[in-house]
Length: 451
Image (tube, rainbow, N blue to C red):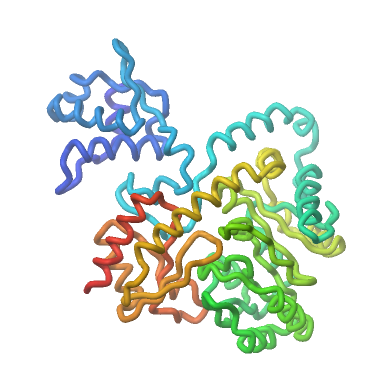
């Protein structure tokens, strides 16, 4: 690459109070992750690099040594150094933004990185099978028959008989909820407090007024749920019963039956978001039965990767047919190539899921152990999901989040998960980072709660 290309890629890489070696190594890592430096690109020789950047050759050598140790740069004797993405970065659960390898630990979203080897292999297989699809018109419709059949078979295998015509493919879970809102046009939506903040945005954007019912790590307040569903009469109820986001709670079979009865009594369409259902971290995962007659939303975002924009809706064949005729079905559908990749990955999900569950279980237990026994907060170890839901004993969540930011840790305070801006003493702490980074997170929380 030219000198000018390198300078543009690194940008303003010097940072106040950060040693030049650390700053340069961090700038190269950031540039690779942002795509400003392509993997495989050759870096200038050390002497030239030092001249271009206006620093000593010793600083350049030390920074490159650090990058080589981390797998970000590869150097062959007598050849230029080339940048690359290290294997550890390619196969980790946490995205780079949540590992401390960039300017901060960003845990505002509890999301996994892609299982890179499996994802790339699935993409290559999908490309090899793409020719027949390219000969068609490319109109999305309700989804590729192959993917609809695969997802339907999975529901059937789990005890819920499903035909392919009961599945509609969307570009993610949020797109699925947006399409349901466009079809059902709810004026009021019963939601959990707390609930996933993106769902609140979708519901409000569709003109629905959220009415909350209390959920804790111990479960659902059925009296409040009854009131919320009554208020949403004829509308929609949005629930996350499997490893609830953000509390991690798992709804019992008895509560699910009661919820179905309440939904029928109040004429509410129950929309169940199952994006966390695969993240069962118990020693012996055992799926709970579904809420009877509910419309189900699924997604590959948590089990695979958020960048795989694949979600789906499971309902009656008649209802799915009506959704397919909605004007927004096309704009909210998933690209055919994405659907092909999803079919490859979801056809055999256990390999990826088993590894992810095992690592998440270890990381959950590690963070729980670090935070246990401290009277400044309390929490319940969740049976699944991606995060701990902390109840702060004294300090407000917004204060803790602000103080944590001074220690390079970005968290989401409780009020963002609430329809009514409550939960001011709660904070969500994902356990997606590796154990060494979880140590840093616990230390940052310790400082943030000291005052």
